[in-house]
Length: 336
Ligand code: AMP
Ligand code: MG
Image (tube, rainbow, N blue to C red; front, side, top):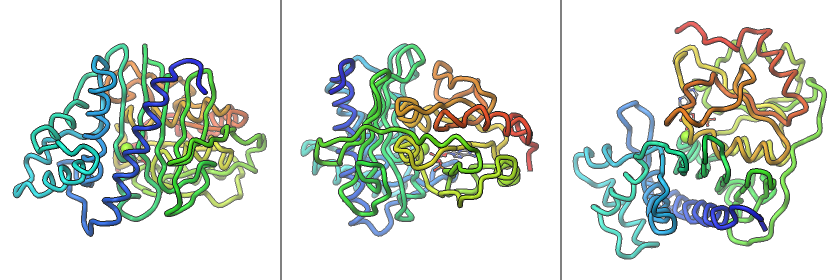
């Protein structure tokens, strides 16, 4: 269906579907799949299993392409009894019968490369806290060329093909190719729908899509923005880039990634923004940083040159930027 990059798009769709399938099995069977990383954030057997799966798929299908992905095998190898790695390998054997511990670490560490002119970026589970809570999470995969996201896929186990929340249903996957639109697929069936952002033009009608984790935003500035925009509808709280898929489908108009006062120097990771941003743009929306600058994917593993993120249905973007300036959210907050 895509005229350009159709092989990459098909690959990305299959990869996120397979990853989603693994996540679901792990979620259904494991009581406690999580361990804690050095930065105190949780990571699960499913994060590693998905990254190993996608790393291996890329090594087979696009052996010269680089991969920049969130996880590495260090925490797994440091884990005292090696039990987590055993679990990861056991799950992978269901899809790759010859998997062993050593190879699994190689596939995971395929994602430790530095971004070059053409590379893939992957968050094996974006929204790990949502995954653990039984809420939204996604597998995100994107192809970047010359600093531009060209192909994007989000595997969304708890959304349907129309990107409507559907806990425990078939699941959905959003796929976009630059210049060719965004589409929603079922997790299994290839029936698809074109994704289109909403046409709301009044700020007071805007529906906000927000992180579930309050530590990922600035509550005071968020309240000031809501006041400045005059929005009255209850914000939708959702983990992960599922928010971008929902916006692409027309069910929300504004998403602000404000800098948290607890981490005022936070730099967005490329795998947290690449796939979601193209899916919103190709559905007719707009994505920039909080100052209106394009997201710059040429700066390594983070969006070092950008400050936060604003995603919108396009029509409300300029009004949102004005509100951001009005409340001072275009500057880094004081540390608290
Ligand atoms: P969300 O589910 O929208 O809250 O976003 C989840 C992502 O936020 C995770 O994948 C983390 O990489 C990222 N994250 C972690 N710390 C922060 C922070 N202080 N500010 C913004 N995002 C963060
Ligand atoms: Mg993430």
